[in-house]
Each structure stands twice: as structure tokens, then as C-alpha cells.
Image 1 (spheres, rainbow, N blue to C red):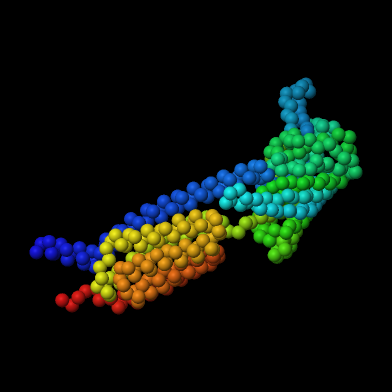
Image 2 (cartoon, rainbow, N blue to C red):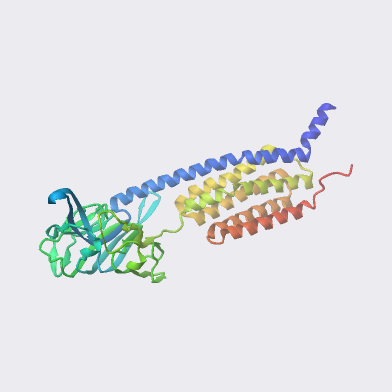
Length: 435
């Protein structure tokens, strides 16, 4: 009698619900392991990309040119004796700066990983007004005009593919690698002014051919800066502190124009040493590849609990309606099939792309669960309900993954509808016998 009572207790639907709920929570552990695998693949992908970038050229940031003049400041003491002498560099930004750029992108592959790289051709020209040293407010300063030099910031020197020449007032000036000071730029090129008359306005131009990866940015260092950039890449993303004033994007590529003045920045036209940072005036374009399938796979795993819970609920309803007992081990097998979907999605997505991988994985898992349900119940109607549930869930998840701005809204409405359907279905269940 006691054994029969224990068996009835274990077979009660209330206890079954507790066991199934605990099982569903326990089966979330493999979903975290799948997330860890996806993260590992993301790290490996980024490692391969960084290796390709290192060989071709990284993200490029071009800034300048800037006129730099060394100075020294003395502070006389009593009896006109010098008690202190300080050395520094005064920086003068161009009055006008116009840049015309053309990007020639291409995709490179290593194994299953793909990156976008480019060759950029930039033509920079503009003018320097006569340096106004009065704006620097330095007392007892002596400027070494003969040691003046121009610097042009280039973030990745490995990407330079031509021998650039800075032409100032029609005179070609010798270009040297590296920056003479790191007040503004950490890397780039230096041009000595030599015999140039710096106490007058200067017209300059220089052409650069650069290899880079994904992103090309410039800094708005002119009192008025104008930039035109174009490419045949159809998926650009405009980045930095300023958006284009005009842009055209279509299937044949893009064209973008920027216009920035010194009033849009937080630094003046001249200063000394490292008083200001020009990187805040950076803007440019990023060449985007289609959405990374790893990110979509990671987002999809977050819905694992929804898939497991809804499948367990419908199987419980089937048990109650059909009076057929389903063992917790069978629940576990269904859950593992659902979790296998994410492993299939990630591995296939690396080879054939996300959308096709999603279709194959969802059809495979739906077919497997439907077949297993039929072997248990031998009722076509029940199998049809399970198949319909799987199909609806995978369509719902795919829709959310394709949305960006409305993903949260669509997900919230979808979950509300699903809960309403479950509530309505639960009304058809007799939870307690009259006896």
C-alpha cells in the first residue's frame, strides 16, 4: 500500500511539473557551454582578422599637416641673470584643408574567415596663414624658425604604398619617416621646412596611397575642413564626431562630403606642446561586411529557455489530454535536440552563411523532434501540434534576429501572444478530478 501511494505521488502532474521545471533549469547549463564555444570562435575569428590586418595595414587615421616651430622661453631674474629656460614646440594648424579620397575595397579570406581591406588614395591640399605667435601668449619666447617642420599623422605606417612629397608654394620638400615630436601624433611623417619663408601664407598639397582595413578616418584640423570620399562599397557606416553634410549610398557605392569649421572643435588654431588633443575631431567611414553570423548565433542562444519551456509545456498538455506518460528522460532528449540546434547553427554558419544555416538547422531539429514524438505517441494530431509549435518558434526567432531597431518590440509582442495562447490552452485542461 505504501509503495502504491509513493508511485501515485510520483505520477501526479503536480510533482511531474516540479520535476520537469527543475530539469528545464538544469538543461540551461549546456546553453552556457554553447555560448562559451561561440565566444571562443569569435576570439579565433578576431585573431585571424588581426593577423590579416597586420600584413595588409590596420585602421588608418590621417591627420594634418601641422606646422611646428620649436621655441625657448627664458625668465630673467635679478641683475638680468637667467634663472630658468624652457623648451617646447608651437603648433599651427592649416587655415584651409581640403581632402579628396577614393577607396578601392576588396575582401580577403583565410580559411573560413573573411575581412574587408582597401587601398585609399588621398589628395590633401590647403593653406597655412602667417603664423600668429601673439595668440600663444608666451613672454620672452624665442622661436627657431630655421628648425621648423611639418608633421602629418598616419596611424599605421606599414600601409604607406607611395613616396609622398609635400609641395609648399611650388617647392618640393623632403619627407622623412616618423614624427619629430609626439605632442599631436604617435606616428606619421615629418617634413623639414628648410629655406621656406614661414612668415607668409603657405600653399601646400600632398598625395598619399595607403593600405588599410575596415576604417579610414581623418581629423578636421583646418580652420575650414572639407572632405570628399567615395568608393564602390555599398555598405558604408559613417563614424566619428561628424556626419557627412551630403551623402549618397546605393548599390554602386557611396559618395560623402564633410564640412567642418574650427567652431565645431574644442581646440584653437595654435597652441604649445600637448595642451590639446585633436583626436576628438576625427571622422570617417567604415566598410561593413554583412552582419556577423556569430553575433546572431549568440543572440539566438539567449532564447534557449523559451524553446525548452514551451516544448515542455506542450508535452505536459499532451500527457494530460492523452493520458500517456512521458518519462523525464524523454523530456531531456527533446531538450538536447533543441540545444543541438545552436551548435548546428554556429558550425554551419561558418561555412554557408547564417540564413541558410538557420534553415537547415531548424528543419533538421524540427524533423527530429516530430519523428521522436510520433514514435512515442503514435498520434498524427499530436505530432502535428508539436511540428507547428517548432515551426512557429523558429520563424519567430528568425524574425527577431533580422530586426534591429524593433527587435525588442517584436519580441515582447510575440511573447505576450505566446503566453495568451498557453493560457487559453490551459483552460481546456482538467487540472483536478472531481473525486
